[in-house]
Image 1: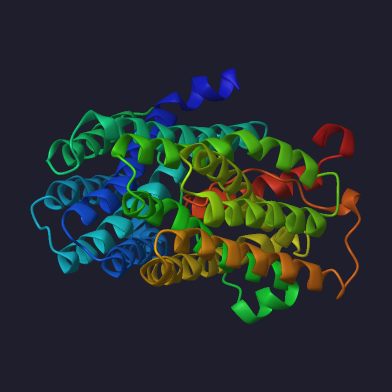
Image 2 (image 1 turned 90 degrees about the vertical axis):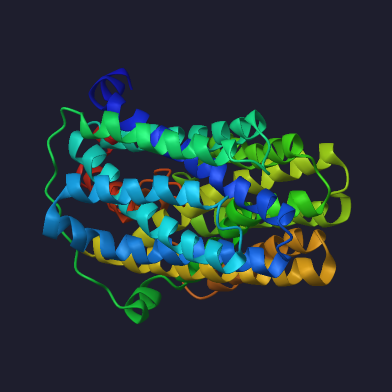
Length: 419
């Protein structure tokens, strides 16, 4: 780990600052939107707009990079992000915010693609797994730190919008001034969704459902907290608990993933997440219970993303993994776009508990589908499964493909070396 930090500290620092800003904006949008009188449905549209832009940016950024290069794309998109932060408190209209969020999501996806390309290029075959693990930890710490910074100002003012704008601007310096060379950028072949589904139905359905869960946790949690009457200080603790759970429980779930049937683990993790979300519906009025629910749901939902990626790779040839990653990210993006819309509708119909109802339904759907798939074909022997590596749902296709490369490298190594 020390060797990885020494080689990539500038890139990781820059990415960490970006994640602090991103974590702040996700919470700030919900809190400030409620203060401005936006309806729950309008806030769900604003949240979906971010994921729509992120999905579009993930697919468009590679072409931009090939045309004008990493540095220009990174600088241009970063400038737009800083400008959008400043415009949010100026253009306090739900339709304007929707447009700004599409731009923000599009540009942030491009920034992720660019920075993750540099990070992956800086890693060697020996350090790629450790580098990606460090990257995931930095992402989670950045989002958690962003919640703490929500208490530095009043959401009704300008300061909390200026802070992430400055942080994102500063983040460019360590990345652009890094000694790491500009990486070559290639695009993997595409795999049709029909072909991907035929190879791993559970992977496709699970990734789609999880996109809805993550978009609710990342984009609508602050709306839930505000509608439930929580002050900003408690909303920030509540959202931080989601990502602390993800950080703490990622390793034990990953450890179990490499040792037991992954379908059974997916079913168990989703079931625990569903039961925790049910507790949120029934007992969410207690703040202590709410923090526990957030910790468990976040600790189940985020590792499930990596678990489903690893499970899907079990049924793919090494040469097909890169092509499949694009389809899985597309399905995750579709789930993320639709998730806030349904969450907003449920919260409008049932009040704040509708937030946990949505998470419960999706987790139970994953439990049911996992159980059904277990009756359709035999499990792959644990010794023949691909290696698990934590990848956050906020990552771009570059990080997912880097994890795929690492899994392929592990598969090529003798068992005693890979261990």
